[in-house]
Image (cartoon, rainbow, N blue to C red; front, side, top):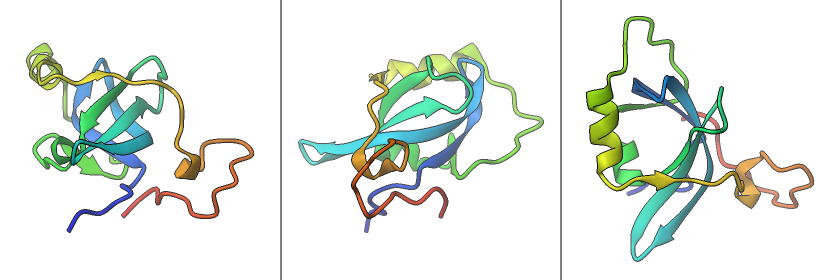
Length: 113
């Protein structure tokens, strides 16, 4: 069973454009495929959409925010990651993200597991 809607906070085990910490600002289902829109916590210019199954891959991602002192990203990892067809995302948060001022949604996505 899939945990949907997903938790908001995620850590990439490898740097993506220099960043490790991301937040899901939007999500959805397209043609039976679950997708999430991630944005860097530090740099909102780093925003992309990936398949939720890829986000659950523990080789690359950890739910929540974690300190990864010894991990260094590489162009090879970044290249493989973005060669899978991930596309740039947008900065339009979901109504239940808790990131919109004045959102009327009574239920919010959880930050952590």
